[in-house]
Amino acid sequence: MSTFEVLNYEKHNGTGYITLNRPEALNAYNIRMRDELFEVLGAVRDDPDIEVVILKGAGEKAFCAGADLTEFLTAPSPVIARQVRFERNVWECFLGIDKPFIAALHGYVLGSGIEMALCCDIRLASEDARFGLPEPGLGIIPAAGGSQTLPRTVGVAAALDMLMSGRWLTAEEAYKIKLVNRILPRQNLLSEAEKLADTIKSCDAMAVRLAKQAVTRGIDLTLVAGLELEKNLYRRLITDRAGEHG
Ligand code: COA
Image (tube, rainbow, N blue to C red; front, side, top):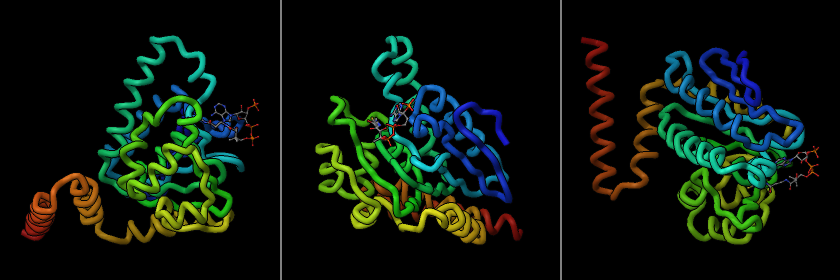
């Protein structure tokens, strides 16, 4: 168990559990959480025991209700500068990790909550989940990668609908636009995430990581370059296997 202030980090049998842990503020994402997330992501990336990660929110009401509005409205400029620096590093770090991440989403999933979920590979939502990007109503745009990750996940039209209107979606609507992979009863959310993690862990860990790389790196390439990437990753896997057996 970690000693973080606003995150919990635990690991069991190759699964890392990152829990956003400010339930009294609906797990709103503050600078402290950003710092701790950056630290924990580095630990997850470098820990050879961790094969898969589950990201979830503490408390009954929310995965994450977005950026902490108290900091957003009052932060002095050095704090904002620090915030921006961490934002960039956190999201680059998050998206660069080739281990699989599963987001377990319940209750309010707003603003940076959606953006964190979009840094994950598979999103499971409970029936009570509600999704929204309040940014346009607040006079800002997403700053945790959402304007780029959302259209890559749900397509341009559905992303612009959410990004320009701030309209909230039910779990069912989120499922329809493929923002989430599955909808589950609230009481099964974590156990289903764990089952999925176990299924992933039953596969070859290197094949899983290279498959993630092939998709996440390939999505921004031309088809020809993407096929080349796939070929290179495949060669790497085969060479590695030959080394193991030779
Ligand atoms: N930043 C800081 N604190 C937040 C927060 C946020 N984004 N979202 C919720 N909280 C706090 C509330 O201030 C409240 O604290 P208090 O008990 O000390 O008053 C606590 O979390 C519970 O929230 P509350 O508003 O009482 O719950 P609710 O069920 O009535 O409403 C929401 C839930 C999500 C609709 C409402 O909290 C909300 O609109 N939050 C802001 C969402 C937002 O705009 N996020 C920014 C995205 S960029």
